[in-house]
Length: 421
Image 1 (cartoon, rainbow, N blue to C red):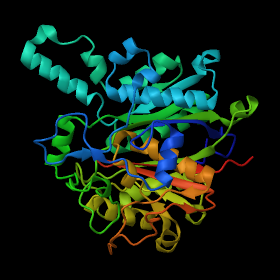
Image 2 (image 1 turned 90 degrees about the vertical axis):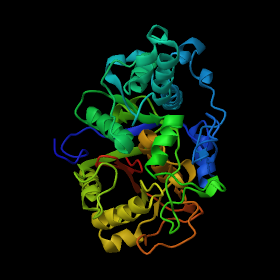
Image 3 (image 1 turned 90 degrees about the horizontal axis):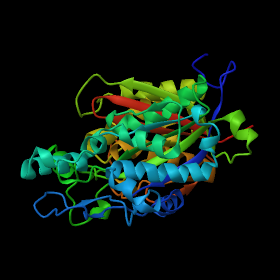
């Protein structure tokens, strides 16, 4: 098989189902509607008493009830990160119409997270410290370990094909989607449930990221705090989410009359080999992931109609990604393609970010609407592209790219295209 997945007999992969729980809504329809309307998911933290913390706000889910999708006894044995991804997976399963039980050996899951059960880890330690080792729950370790988001999706949906779990920081769920694409292309599976989840809004999560000086401290105006590419950006806003897309081999989808949202046509990865947390300042190494994805898709940069940027509202990261796009597309094409960062609305959902933003890229292609970069008010000379500022834009988008870059120098890009026979 050549690198171009659509040539020389390689199997084509389409998207037939979507599911998501995000700070903008507990399903894809509500999330997309609020995103396009320019809403922000940021608000005062409700998960714990934040009085003594430097940051008092985050992008939490609103009115999320896991029992809507998960049996009560089962939900109690899960960390929040697993509850969220199972909710998204059940939505995606229903949306796709895939009958997992009819062919479980050919259906798999590829589910990512950056951290895993952070709250469960903290709860376990608190019990150990306060009540002793004999009182630690036997469910503690299964709640904590990062692969259990994938494990629960497989157990509850009944998939028996490939089961993988990427744990590559903020690039994780883009890589999970890429793993699913590869699994179908080479024939290991016919359907893959792919996505990511993160539940980091805990005392140790907020304190840890704040101590790195990564977080915005606009406590007086949370909804304006996440401002990607804006000249006054001062840090990211923590978010939580779970999102799943159903990938399916084209002929299988056709044979059952499935609704097809779009086609997944490209995937690229690279590494910075530079710094634990800071991005490659030149932009060259992340650009290799974009270039690889475009080459895999057999797409010229001039054909791309939208880029969903990783941009997290940090001074270094957003400027670096502007350089990334220029390297990958060339200066002239980079200035023509609309780019937005939806993290202005959702905050940074870490290991779930790529999956959430893949949903947005798919919807942009499907609905011919570009989601805006909200809170864009001040120009930055280092960020000089078209960022779709503040208002959604109608556009005939045939091809979209979505970027995810993670701590440690992990870079991943995917390419989706309007489905064409």
